[in-house]
Image 1 (cartoon, rainbow, N blue to C red):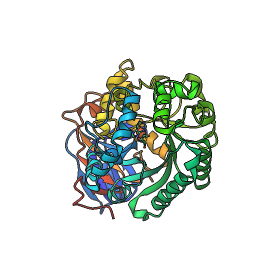
Image 2 (image 1 turned 90 degrees about the vertical axis):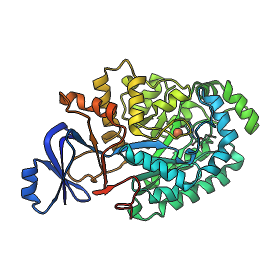
Image 3 (image 1 turned 90 degrees about the horizontal axis):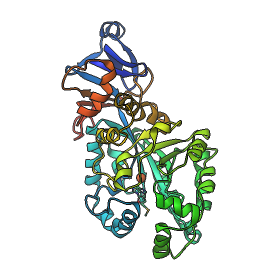
Image 4 (image 1 turned 30 degrees about the horizontal axis):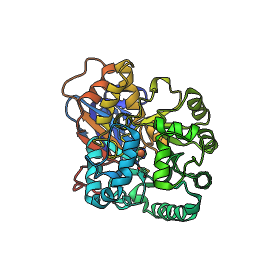
Length: 413
Ligand code: MCF
Ligand code: FE
């Protein structure tokens, strides 16, 4: 048993002062140190630095590790030039992206306090790294393919990758899952099969949805820049589905939809009515010129995610949260900071079906300690100071074990 003591703890009831958390693999209790010691007299007491706050480990719901080699290869600024540049550079980016590079990015996520992430896997190349990294990983095997002719081959390949992620050792903390790439790139027959499979096996399900204006135009009227793209690379000139057909295919199974920047109020209402959620990727949306998701109008749960280095400059969750503070400049900043912390902890865990994200009894002891440079004046300001001042967290625990980015202390078993 360990007891972690800090000036503040972020709990489902807000920030509490002068308390401590008792945990082994799971959290046992939050109480005063004196009370906890009465129940657990043998516990190891760990005192954090002054002005520290204990948070549940942060959760990055959507990242493409396989694209970690990108620095300046892909074109930022506008969606279609970016997509063209993905086609042109993908093979080379994959070639230079080795396990070492992806593990460094898992390290970077860990240093920013990320204890769980959703890995969107196009090829299955990051499975080994995800098995080795100490973090929990929801491993989203991507299904892509708009041409009915190749549907069987693509589905077969997808099933093989899914199987591999299903055969991991439980100690590796991997949850197998399915990602539908997008409405413009997945044939409705494939989509139907994958949704049924997810439902039957209770696998988390995710899909990129209504990211760009080009995507909307193509799905609505079969025109625009995506038409040129499909004519050039796939010799087709009509979309395989439309917004309505794609969206209703998920009606019976709650799905985590990524981006949704271009969704209308009616579409967002439909997503909300069917129990879905949104992964909000503020820097990715800005870098690809897709616009701003109006999070102030959402009435469904959302997470905040980095997306991959294919459309970002870092995988740090705190870099992402700082960007979100800037992007949503009309939302009162203290309120927004509080929402962002909740979105990346409790809400993200609920969305991915992980038993963590909250500091309360019976959750996994996945914790991130941050240390503020000075004492906050009020509890209401802690969320904002945490986001503004945290470049790296001070300590991370996963399932009760302290982990360090270089993994040479206590490694993932
Ligand atoms: O989320 C961003 C932007 N939207 C769509 N796809 C991707 C993103 N980052 C990487 N991707 C991948 C996607 O998984 O790029 C490929 C897919 O494999 C695009 S389709 C050729
Ligand atoms: Fe993505």
